[in-house]
Length: 334
Image 1 (cartoon, rainbow, N blue to C red):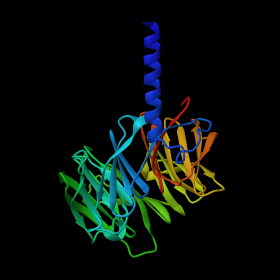
Image 2 (image 1 turned 60 degrees about the vertical axis):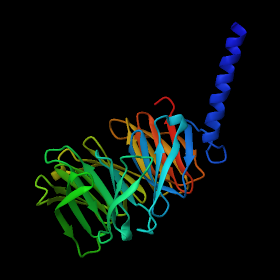
Image 3 (image 1 turned 180 degrees about the vertical axis):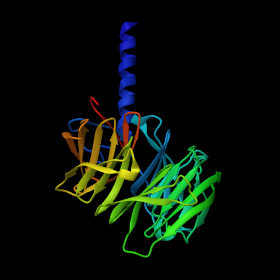
Image 4 (image 1 turned 120 degrees about the vertical axis):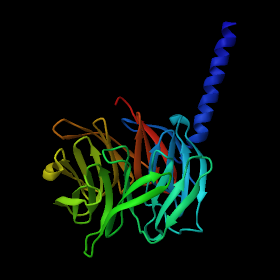
């Protein structure tokens, strides 16, 4: 009897191993290095570039005019469950996307416009509406705040603030268009403030009255790529630097420290004192951030594909790997 139980356990372990191997092909995944533990991976139809995570679903900008949904409920066995091709309405990729509590994805597609996608059934995605006149490149949502449910979007030379009044229904509250060399690349809304990163600066607006936003701070900053917000800290990524700001009082945003890299970074994510930064050479570094914002390099890993976006959920990082799909990884010991 005991021998039969042991044989049964060995058989179950073998089956689990085969299942993992089928979903993480060795020719696509790098070897685990240092603190990085590659858990699983799944290819997409074309190429993964931008992500939004609403557990247990990960929505992926997948090549031109395509949205792919990946089920990440079981991180060691993530799988693609659906894909929406809307070539009839667009020829551009989704540059940025956000999902609200009504299961609507708002997608910025640059020259192809601003799209609303219905994802209430992740197995059957569909385009609900689109506006080709709004050349949107970045979006941010802040729901259930002191005002209500707000959506902010930006393009090269404009920003707009909307109130979400229903499933896919939005009402414009304010907007501004600029005739200058300033080129907006990223927007973030955290009521009562809005942040806009451009090639020249990070601009901060007071939007306590979203009908009449007021510019309160403009921090000169060249070659902006992205920013993340951790508590009352703003981390800004440029072509060769990572810069920490104190935005506990956005009227007096203060630079705390900055770090310079020899290789241009492509994306980053910070969570629980761990900082992941990917670079143009397809390498990713893991740093730990001290209370005084000192960076300690823990380890690195070399990928076969460029990491263009990173999302996080309860100990797991999901990477958008260009020309492949999505990788899921953990950090050993952190």
